[in-house]
Amino acid sequence: MSADKLFTVAGTATNPDGTTKARFANDLVARIKILNKAKCTNINLTELPRAMTKLEALQYLTEQGITDGDAGYAVANKLAEKSKVAKRGEVMVKAVKASVPKTTAKTAVTA
Image 1 (cartoon, one colour):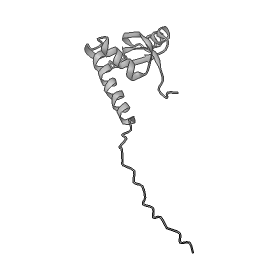
Image 2 (tube, one colour; image 1 turned 135 degrees about the vertical axis):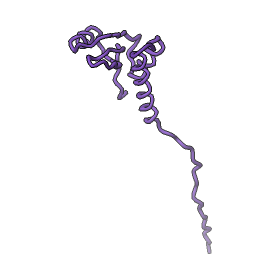
Image 3 (cartoon, helix red, strand yellow; image 1 turned 180 degrees about the vertical axis):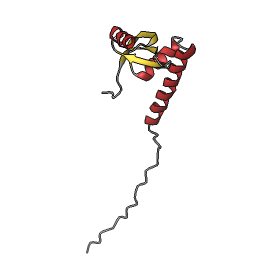
Image 4 (cartoon, helix red, strand yellow; image 1 turned 90 degrees about the vertical axis):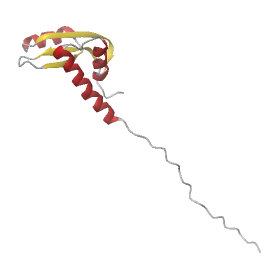
């Protein structure tokens, strides 16, 4: 089982202080209500074609053309952050030739 959470909704919204952030959810209507209650503006959420991780959702948003203004900047920054975290989790595997210890055979002398 994967440790990454899956989301069916992704997009951007601007906080009351003017910062634009990438947003993720599983219920579009509930998320919009929460953002409206928090007085967020420029809410731009979209339903994803399938359940995706944050990294996959950010890549999908980029493919869909969310690249203008603050929303594009927020998506690009979050995508760079998530890509860096994903690369950090990768493990480098180095092939090393196994050495076999030499064994000496003792011959038995029979009398």
